[in-house]
Length: 111
Image (cartoon, rainbow, N blue to C red; front, side):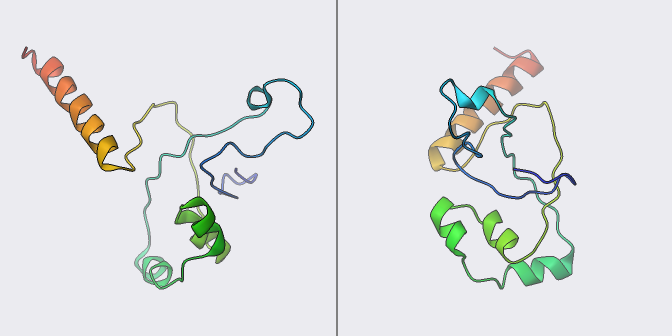
């Protein structure tokens, strides 16, 4: 979820907001974004956020970005049309490595 300045309001592993009272597929009635998660920090901010205690929302969603938001830090966002692979588990990493190997073989004309 974003504010009008393209800053993150909330991150979730589930679609938010839930459109209450909608009898049809509510996920088609609102714009939802997929999170890619590429971060850049100023040194002073990085020092501060690494000292923050784990927050209640972070525990609930298992998303560290919520710790930063709960402590008043802003996360600027940008929209892209590029599709990406999520890498959150060792299995995801194996899948990404497989896709990369296939791409490298294809682009080099091997195989």
